Image 1 (cartoon, rainbow, N blue to C red):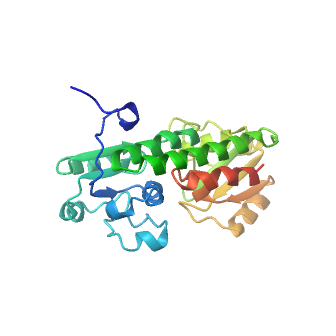
Image 2: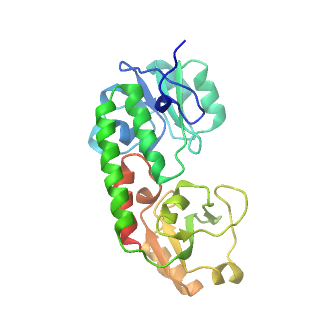
Image 3: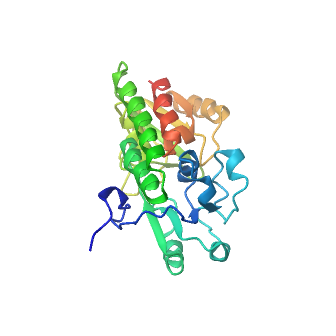
Length: 262
């Protein structure tokens, strides 16, 4: 028995045969955008309410709840052949329920910027957009090379905040931390959780060069940054959460955005 090419293996190692006539429900906002940019919007029969890009395209695609509170019955009625999920964004029990009636569950888990290349190849290879995926990968490689050809800034230790009440940050094994690492920046080790809670302390602040407040998932603003900077006495910057955390299509702009942070 022959197997599908290696690039059609998903994050769990499950191989997927090409399915150019697929009916896709995508539960990952950044991948919904990627599928649209690869010319696959016509195959999307469902998306989450957080799948907001590209706005003019996704408006016509039915919503099936959020990334965490998926409406199983809505998906069942849409009769998809494939559902695209992500290990970080979608709850395992939900995915297991979907696997009970959706023929193909495609699991993704990009952890570094360079993981976008096999991600694009996987989406293009399964859903019949190989050429578009190849063009996207070339564009990504060009942006990645440009980032690393640019002058390097100083190494820094930064705390990237994604939430307050409680305060939460990212661990070193997340996509966001890997984006920061492209600049030579590191995040502090605050425990074993991928998205640990923390409390402010002088010891923590003394080990930082700066604090970064993300515009998502918590909607930090410049007012938050100004107030926290006065409180801590170190630089606090507002950063675009989509540019830092959305893999797929937005990673191209994300690599360019990194150069503005140096």
